[in-house]
Image 1: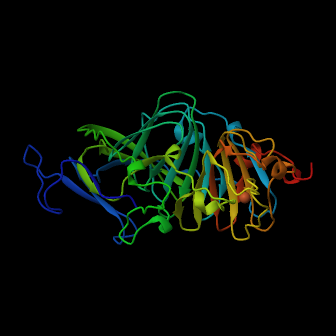
Image 2: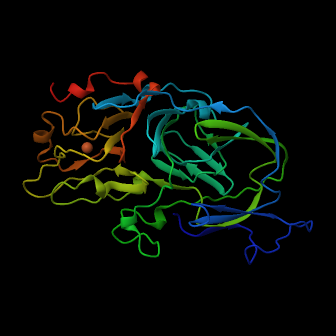
Image 3: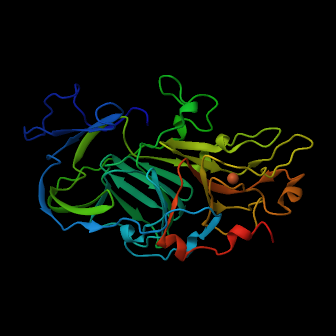
Length: 385
Ligand SMILES: [Fe+2]
């Protein structure tokens, strides 16, 4: 999905002899997606990436489903997810289906004694609070407030946080996360009408090559099970790589909103897509400028998608009682719209400072036990107040 990039040293020709200073061969690794039929990268390791020395007992980390089927507007108090020291333990899946898991996390500590690999989901981490460095085999990515970190499945990584106060909104996607097709040219460039372009994408940099022998634990998640796999060499022993499959960062603050004379529908806010869901960014923008425009959204029946909104910052003009980190879920099957009074109040408003991330799934979401623990009861009746 990303564009061709290269860091470090690579041989002139792929699949040919490439030797270390001591005369031994570097180990080439093809990192390919959708079998061998889509984007890929080639990585050159000092040591083979296959030297497993120990395996731990598997741990079940499958989210516990509390409500498999339901038809009710829901609201979750995202910042009520309790901070936890360990990054993986801090991650709480709240809304899930077969296409994606929506996860909240408030990790307090950096990952230092293990690495993490999600073997069957790309991850999109939206950084609501906190900053630090995402360390990968491809190099490092500094991150801060408002960054989307997109990490292809299989990418071995560690996250180093600069502070203890971190709030993350994470989407695990069981299909590749892509730029929206409607913004891509036939040959893969982001076109002029796209709300962001290649310059806004931050690829990894500062490739650090670790030539270290020892016991390196990679906690690897696959199909809801976490496997502890120990390797004989540091996984970041890459001397160079090139290709189109690598983690990157994109700041929501670099998303240029598309506005119009009358209310624009949610697809203008689209940022990423995957199979059966999209991600949208609602950013500070000028409101509609038709003399009779109504800036608040119309009531709508999203009959084909469950609509998840994650409130980041600013004043949300269409809704009452909104807090930072709140999630609303408006499921397919019943209409929703502005809260009472919001339509009239919006008339004449010139701009909004709202910042939010939306995930629209084309199949229903299920609520987990973790979701019910942070639910705002009675939200479904909030339009009748
Ligand atoms: Fe909506």
